[in-house]
Image 1 (tube, rainbow, N blue to C red):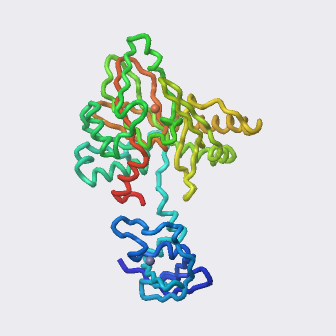
Image 2 (cartoon, protein in one colour):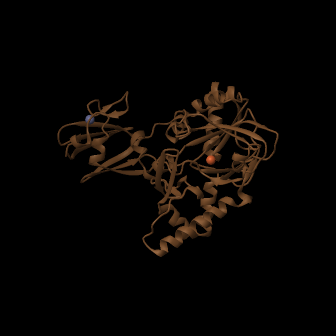
Image 3 (tube, helix red, strand yellow):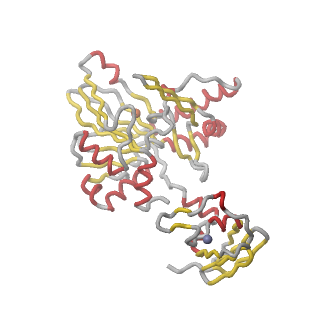
Length: 373
Ligand SMILES: [Fe+2]
Ligand SMILES: [Zn+2]
């Protein structure tokens, strides 16, 4: 790759205007440049951390600047000297900097992605970089991937969870299983259909990924998994009801979960935007755990109901649903910040195993694999 060069650099009071060879111009403030000095007094290369506290940043001015091919040297009023690589400085062109932080999701509806999502044998996922990349890329693209030929036990599922970033502890523990035996009357109510939702909406840090593994389903039928792309529903809402979309990106919908000696509560927009890219970052929606809320005025209250109803009807629209049956040996992993999930009603004995992985930890894996910035 050709090294990017600098044509010239000009000090304009407290600003340095840098003209690159490709005709790009980026302007840097003196405080930024001094803060980003990469000399050994200012920066520790092996830890990639600054050496000094922000408070110690001196109030200095640029005395002179010299361009030397792909390097730029600044001499400061306190005689400190800083050298910057053109490649490093070019990273801070605003649009390119923002674009690198975007995740290029592929929005979908219905079953149109059923032949596109990754289905990778567990050995290939665990032992090859190519297998790991395929799984994480599928989660980034579509919000879902399948790991196959997994031992149909909680232990087998835990191995997959560790490789996806590590098990996230919640009130349900680390690994959990849900056993429903429809023949036992007292739990029969749990086999009714489950509408679309994201998990842990009352948490400050809801699960990043959710893993589901059907460990057993005997003497019955139904119990199919239903997925819907929350980013598709958000895009549809923006197109059809822009005022509702705007409201749901700002209004803090409070959720709560009080059960078994626990008490969770968190308020956040149902559609949360990334503050840098302005793209949709997270969907939080569970119709049932919404807190009773007070409203500033009647208009806000009515807008809360109207906008959530519009959003939910898109989420519940069958045309947007991808429905399928999970089988023992196949771990489904999906992005709980993006997809909503549900289940059709069922009969018989069904054991579903699963766990969560925090967003911090799975994004770390995806970043190390160089799939995201
Ligand atoms: Fe759930
Ligand atoms: Zn320095």
